[in-house]
Structure formats: structure tokens, C-alpha cells
Image (cartoon, rainbow, N blue to C red; front, side):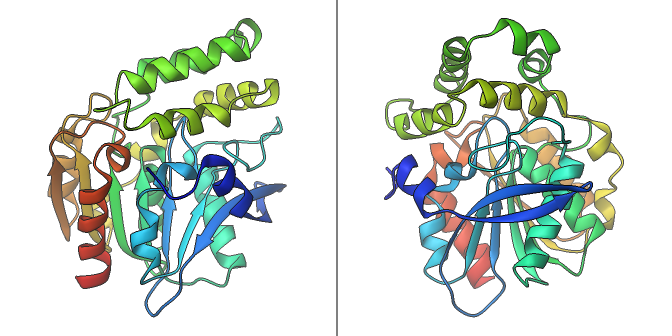
Length: 284
């Protein structure tokens, strides 16, 4: 169990305004830690939020500053309609957030869509991303999965109630966690953020914004950052074969597959995940 509940995590978040495609959007982020060395940025995917990392960040915050944003359209960040939520736009948001925080070099840890953002950021801003960790990340043409495609259909926002969405998300996560009972905190936290009509529409828009072209246009061979592919070996959404391709294409990449871990690897194996992450970021 994480040391903070979802509500405590939410209350501890800071907020700022970031311009994305000319829209001034509210961005919520959790921040902790200090110490020498580059700060570590953690970014979640769909349909999660920054609370995904609640069991992992304390170990890193003991040695480094950690910054854990909610992507726009997620969590406590802006959910209003009328802006792009694609990983291209999320990359712009992260770039603007870090610039506003005065950060010109960082380590980046990304899961799912957050990993796709990390791929783009490392390719486009090699001076910004010194170390890159990708966990069960979207890459190449590995995405979107059918569930997300269906979620992004316009009629979903019109025909689905908040209660129906909650049931869908609960079933999706419980069926794809190694131990749903131990990870009940995660399921409840992820459902909570989508508990309103505005949030329901936001999630549909987020799903509709998934765009394979935003990773197929990236050449991983051009990534200069030292890279760790820390992957749940039993993932049914982003199979480890995509991590193997990334390992072969990125010049300085190491692949670690964690057994007994599926897509939600920081939740399935938090202790070993944190240990591997610490060794790569702090000791490597």
C-alpha cells in the first residue's frame, strides 16, 4: 500500500498553468524530494494518473527531486473540452512544465502513453532527457488497443453513464492486475478521477486522441539517452516483444523483464520496480 491515499495525494499536488497549442491549461503535479543530480519526472498513461506511481516515488524522492504530473485531460489537471490530449500535445505540456520549473536536464520515467511521450521528448530534446526509463510503453505501431479505440468513439460519451464507466474501468484493471486484492488502492484511485460527467467526456477525448503516427514518426535509433526498458513480462497490451525491438534500436538500452507483472508493472511489482529504478537512476 502507498503511504498516501488518493485524496491525500491529490491534496499534496501543486498546480500551474502551461500553454499547449495556444491553450492555457491547468496542470497538477506531485513534487517531493531534493538532493544532487537531475530531477526525475514520472508520467502515467491511459486511463491512469500520477497516483500510479504512489508506491514507487518515495524511494527515489529520498535521493532526488521527483515531479509527477497528471497529463492534461487526466487526474486533477484540466479536463475541459476543446484541446488536444495526444502524446504530441502531452510532450508539449511536459516541455512547458519543465521550462516553467527551471529544469533543463532530467531523468524521465514513462508508463504506457507516458512512455510514448518520453520517446518523443528524448528524440526531440536530447539535451533535456539524460536518462530514459520506459515501462510497458506505447511504441512503433503497438497501439491503440481495441478497448481504447472503442472508448474513444463519439457515441461512448453520449451513451455511457458515469456508473457504467466506473464498472468498465474496474473490470479492465481487476482483470489485468496480478493481485487485484493487494492493488485495490490503485483500482479505487484510478476510478475516482473519472467520477463525473466532465471526466467521462474527458476520458473519451483522451482515448480518441491516441494516434499511432505519433510513435511511428519517431526513430528510436536517434535517441541518445541511456535507456532502461523496465517491462512487465506478461503484459497483454504492450507485449515485451516491443521492448525487445526498442532494445535493439536504441544504442544504449538495457531490457529488464519483470516476471509476475502485467501491464501495470509499477503496481504489480512495486518493490522490485523501485529497486531496479533506483539502481539505474541513482547508482548507474
